Every structure is written in C-alpha cells, then in structure tokens.
Image 1 (tube, rainbow, N blue to C red):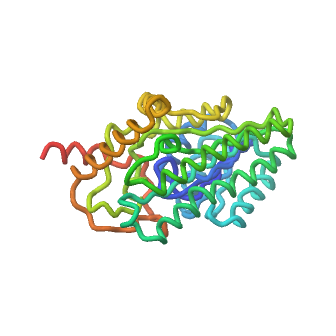
Image 2 (cartoon, rainbow, N blue to C red; image 1 turned 90 degrees about the vertical axis):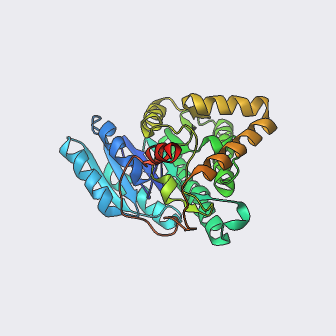
Amino acid sequence: MCKTIREHGLSGSYDQSWGIEQPVPWPAERNTLAPFAASLTAAPLPKPLAARRKNILDDIVREIIAAGGTAIAVKADVSNANEVADIHKAAIDAFSRIDVWVNNVSVGAIGFFWDIPIEDHARLVDVNLKGLIHGAHAALRQFRIQGYGTLLNIGSIDSEVPLALQNTYAATKAGILSLSRSLNEELRLAGEDDIKVGTIMPWAVDTPWWTHAANYTGHEPRMAIMDDPEIVIDAIIGACLHPKEEQPVGWKAKTSNISHHLMPDLTEKLSADIAKKESDKASPRSPNQGAIHQPVQDGQVDGGIRARMREEDDR
C-alpha cells in the first residue's frame, strides 16, 4: 500500500493521502499512523506516505520496513495542488500504479461562527475541501489511465448532520460527501465501472484532532460518547476492498444518520444542544488557533479526551 499523509489523520489537525500498490496514497494525520502502520505492515504492499512532518513519517517508514514491508515518505501539504502532484509522482515513480487513494484530510475550528477569525474559516476550506479535491483529482486521473482504482474520502457524520459549534468544519465535510456522490455518478456516465468512490463517516473520535483544532469556545474540547480510533481504522482498511458511497462508522454514527433522514430538524437541534452542553462542562481554555496553520510535533494516536472528560465529570 502506498500512503500519502499530509499531516494529522483520522483524528487530526491536518490531512493525509495514500495510495495502494498496490499502492495506496492517502492524505492523513500522524495521529492515526501508528495503528495504521501496525495494520498495514502485515500486508506486503508498497506504502507511500506524505505529510508536513516528514520526521514522524520517517519513523513510520522504518516500522513498516522492519516488519518486512516497503514504504517511502514524501513531505507535502495537501492544500497545495503542486505538492499533491508530487505525492502522485512519487507513488508512480516508486510503484508504477495506485490501487487505492485515501483522502484523510481534517483540520477543525470549534466555537460560534462569528467568534472564529475569518482566516481560520478559510484555512478549513483550503485543507478539508480544496486539499481533498486536489487528492481526488490526482487519483481519478491516474485511475482512468489504469482502468481501475478506489478513492476513499474521509468525511464525518457531520457530512450528513450539520453540527453547531463546528460550523465551517461541518460544511466542508458535507461538501466531501456531495463530491463523492457526484463523482460516482460521473464515473457511471463515463462507463468506468472499475473505479469506485467511497466516503467514510465517523462519529466523534478520541484523537488529537480535538486539541489540534482551533478553539474559541472558552473551554477545553469535548463531545459525548467518543469512539476509539481503531474502529475507524478498521472501516478504512475494509473499504479499500469494499467501498461504499456512504459509510457511517459505529452505532452512534449510524443512528445519527438514520435519525437525520427521518427527523432532520429535531436531529440537528438535539445535536446542537448536546455539543453546547458538553462544551460548557469542560475546563476553561483560552482562545487559540491550535495546529491548523502550523503543525505540532506530537505523534500520539489517542487524544486523551475521554480521560479528561471523566476527570471533569467527577469534579
């Protein structure tokens, strides 16, 4: 597999891309790389990795090689179309083809829309939506040359259910699902039956995404009944072979998805009330831009949010 990672992954404060060779390019976040590496090293597939923090990618490459795999690291920022082109070129130069491209792109900003600086809103669009478009464009052009391939876009349950206090983030995730749907129809019209586009839609996941996000709520970030990163990792790996146009992950995301189809207004109101209630219960925190403009150097997988929430709830 080839994996191109831009910065922070599933949990993340940035984006990643991979390809499978069977390469798998994927813009991802370092927060998810360790468990992904553990899962992928079992498969003898080449893995291109790309991210802003190449030093962390280099550690993952060493793990993969030590386990008998093949991998390369590429320093890249997916909000820059030229650097995404470099990811594509590195994967093809090294492995000749790309079987799966995973667009795992995510930075966040939490707070009332009017309290978040406009430059932070713009950054979310540049990374979460434009960055994903850059990856999808590179992947689909390559797939059409090959005659096959799978593009996986990492959305969110926010792709279906807009969430208060995550306004522009939710808008970008909705755009991802809309793009995936459109691409599948265009591929059908073009007769490209062996090219598939899937969208992974997780619930809130306990990763460093929350602490890397810009935060203007006045409180530490938190959300009700968070999921483990592993269930999303498993979903992505499974979708490499069996992609679905819309794939909510876990019972909470699936329930929320169904609820929104049946009772959209009520689901949005309840979701907003839960988000505000959880935010108000958290410890105080000064407004900050997190890691959305500049990467941070930690490479953890678990965000530690649930542990902090238990401490806050016990006070």
